[in-house]
Image 1 (tube, rainbow, N blue to C red):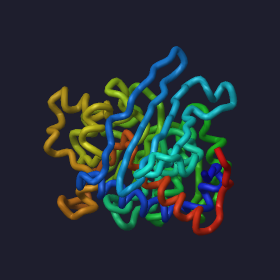
Image 2 (image 1 turned 180 degrees about the horizontal axis):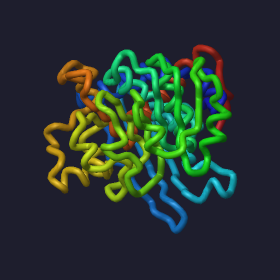
Image 3 (image 1 turned 90 degrees about the horizontal axis):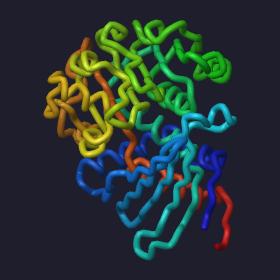
Image 4 (image 1 turned 90 degrees about the vertical axis):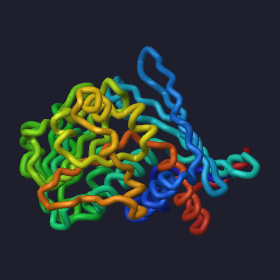
Length: 318
């Protein structure tokens, strides 16, 4: 069995390859080619742990991921995870992968794919709300598909640290914003990657023509975008079943009469040419992702194939 650490994963699956893996994952998911039940949730006094299995094309993967909001005070990331890749015919474990790194990578790559498909071609300003563990890969992915020259980051606690860490990424200027509005307004692309239970982005914060990747909320009670903003946007998601069970922004907008579910589309259907993406330059587009197991499966499989070809990782006997 092969073990891939975070560093191994970065070598085996660079961001452009991860974006390609997400294109394959979402296309297969929309075509009904992935067996993927909704994630199972275990709630504890300090956080929540999810089990996320998926199967496609002869391979299975299972991710166990925990979201513990108090972890930063302990010097730990909010999200920690482990991914096991299984042979689809025998069920034997083939690999164990650092799931924390894989989650950040595949989530960033999904936003990179959505940005590639939906953002205006000449998008140069990126606004980021949230500076936790998901933010760096989100920024890397957007910079991989659009010519970003200015990145504005807002977080009430960690923005300065991330600004220093990303100084000069892809030749862009990286600055700290004083508020969510300052980060988002006049930005061509906006990322929300927070654990806020209430909206951090309103319609007044967003200019016409912007593209938004909203990846932070994952329960019906959480929402990073206001219903009014969702109402005014063309909305894309990772998968209908997962989104309508967990995407608070969409559920709240629908329940408030501001969103017709028929106007919400899977990004995989766009990949397959079954629907239109952006229809005009001034349109606001939103990619709302709650994260699905197909992403872990396809990212892990791509990483494992590359690792086996290039001798990356550590082989162990169980």
